[in-house]
Every structure is written in structure tokens, then in C-alpha cells.
Image (cartoon, rainbow, N blue to C red; front, side, top):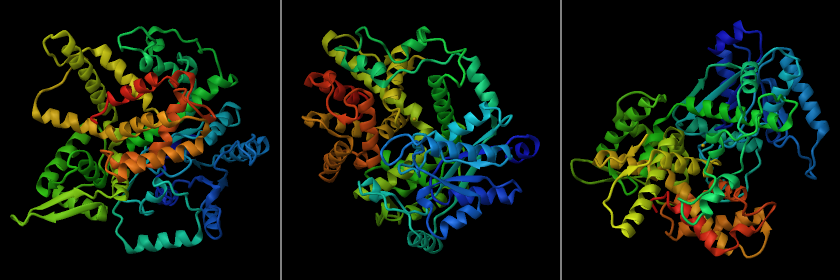
Length: 545
């Protein structure tokens, strides 16, 4: 697809990969070279501008940009820098040169795509709309690793500062890569699409006016009962009450920002959807959320096979092949010390269990998140169904009516929409089947989201201690310490709920809900303890905790 597009269309290609490892740059360039496709110019972070490596990156077509395009040391917009970068990028595209841009801005520390930073993408869009070039072909790229060569990001997830890249560190990484087995890498190039056609489509469709998380969810959380009158999630969308934006173009700044943000999300979703599922992803996910207390190897192999079939039925690709038992053993060897293997002394059967140490749980969570995008929709529905069933059970206790597991389609959709909005910093009439097989999978889906919900519920408990304003950085540090202590003392049901990226996401979400702005303090809405308790109750309603 990419080779055909490169040869037939008179337009530069812009490759937009997910970012998992430093060798992403090398892999994409090498693959394109092997297929006689022009290597792209790579927009690399200036943290990689170090001796020798910077020369190599430039020879491969790379150029270095600031991690945050619009900010200077004093926090103001650097108009000159952005103008120079815009002119350089525009000239590359005018000369039909391809680009490679990492929208996440940094390697994922969670195993899931990070929120997009659309600075470079906005320059590409502005260049096209300025008439300098007739079109641009966008190519989302999915990348999956059995095991990343960086080893793990546990030190950063434990709250330690990120180490600056150095030549010595890179040399050690190369040496480790040559000594150890890191398994396979899978790179998937998706169907290129025309940026011009995409923008034309956005101009001709009705774009919904964006609502803040506070506008969407606060009435739901604060309402005394969920049946009360309030603006439900997406109610404006259902009722068609949004401002008509059809006639707007990129000269309209709010519309421009929304279109670019939507494009960035669409690209990351497509790249993530195309990323192959690796054996380590499945094994880590099964051990954490189905067999946390251990499982016989034969049962793990059986569940691995069933999970593989489930993934294929959902139209996701696999990055491995072969006999399930061999593949599971391969994955266990790659996961190393994160997994404990013990013998039962009975027919030489082995028991496999995840290690309970905090670093091991963090690392297993990183790989299990490779499955997050496969089941996230189902998991949200499962947790929403759980919340509604709990409400129904509570109502039954007061009304003494007959029990039923039949759920209203509208209520389930709205509850799921609310949870989906709440977790935005992370991606029919429903009858809950009573069969053991379906119930087991239903519980598995709920457990996938439980560490995330546990982090948010812990943060909701912690805001009770917010007695005076403090900086966001200090609050994040204090919240992280609180969640980590809960994990180390065995209070947390899921130790991986204390990862630093989850802590930062909870702070971002609570800010959007209106708990604070630049300096964090409780807003007037959450000053009453009753409302803070309602926030906690809302989160726990979805969780198995």
C-alpha cells in the first residue's frame, strides 16, 4: 500500500508511528530502504542531540526539534522558533520529501499510546491549507515489541526523574541488545489517506462543539440520584443542540484546533488498532487479570489459545505464530523475573504466577497494556453494567421487587459514555449471561479496568487531605507517595495502580472536572465533603474493589 502510494501519488508521505522505543526510528527507515521507498526526514526530540548519535540521526535524515514547540524558558510563546520550524517543514514537503513524526512526543511509559502532541502535525496541516503543496498522504504506523530493548521504565514509574540520554547509556543499550534475546518486533504500515480529503470531509460535516469534562460529568457525579434531571454525557450530541460549524475553515482558530486534535486522535487510534498483539501481551494480561494467584501451565496454555482466538475474532492481528505451548514458553522466558515458575511435583506440571514485587507488577502491566485497546470498549461496557446492576440491587433492597439482570439499553449507553469520558486521559438491551464461561470473561473485562479505577478512587480519597493550595507538581508527588505506600503495605488490590503515568492522568482528569487550575485546590463544588464522597462513590460504582 505504501509503496504503491509513494510511486503513484504526487504527494509527500507523512509517517505517524506510535512510539515504543528509541529503535523505532531505525526500524522504519530500514524497512522503507529495503522496499526501495524514500527514507523520511525524522523529527526527533532535541534530547537525542548528543555527540556521535546526533551525527548518525542527521545522516539518516533526522532533524532535532524542541520537546515543546511553543514554550521558551520563561514559559512564553516562541514565535520565531515556530516560524523557522514551519518554514523548514514547508520546504521539505514542497520538495516532495517524506516526514516521520511521533505525535506522542516521547516513548510510551505505559504500553498504551500517550495523548497526542499535535504541534508538528498542525504545521503539516497549515502548510497544506496555505497552498504550498496540493496534498499530503498520512500513514499511521503501528509498532509492537515482544520486549523493548530499554528493558523497562520502572524507575520512572516509581517517580524517579527521567535520566538524560547519553552516549554511554546508548552504548550500554546496544550491548544489552546483543547479549539478550528480546524476541520479535512487528511494524505495520496502514493504508495511506489523503489529508486534503480528510479536511474537506471535516468542512462538510457537522462538527460537535466540544464540552469540557466538567460540563459533561459533574452534573452526573453531584446529582443526588442518577435518575435526577441533569445534562447527560453527549446529550447535546443526541439532541443536536451544538453550534453549527459547517461553514468554518482553518482561519477559524477554535475550529482549526479541534480538527487538528481530532486528526491526531484518529491517527493514534488507527496506528494503535493496526499494532500487532504479541505473545508477551497476552501472557502478561492473563497472569495479572485472570490468574493473579497462579495457574497451571496447561491451563495457561488453554486460556492463551482461547484469548488468541478472541483477539482474531475482533479483527486484530497477531505478531506470532506456532504451537500455543511453545509460544507461551517463549513469552515466559522473555518476561523473565516478572514471573514465578514452581513445580507441583505431580506429572512435572508447573505453576505460573506473576511476581508480587512492585517493579514486576509495573513491568507486567506495561506489556498487558498492549491488549488494552482490544478490550477497552468491552471493559467499559462491563464496568458500566456492573454499576447499573449494583444500583438495581440497591433498589431491590428498598422496593422488595423481583430480581432481574435485564438492563436498559439507553441507561447502559449513557453510563458507558460517562465512564468513557472520565477515562479520556487513558482511550442493545444487555442481558448479563449467567453461564460460568461468560461470567468469567465478564469478570476478566472488569479486572482490566480495575487498576485504573483503583488509581482514580485512591486519588478521590486523597483529595480529602487537600486543605490548602499547592502546586500541581507537589500535589502529583504527594498523591504518588500515597498510592505507592498503599501498594507497598498491601492495601491496594492492584499494585500497578500506583504507576506514575496513572497518577499524572488522575491529576489531569480531576483538573478537568474542576477540582483545581494552575495551583491545585478544591473548587467550591468539591469543598463540601458530601460531594467528594459522591465522586468516590461514582468511581467505585464501576469497580470490582
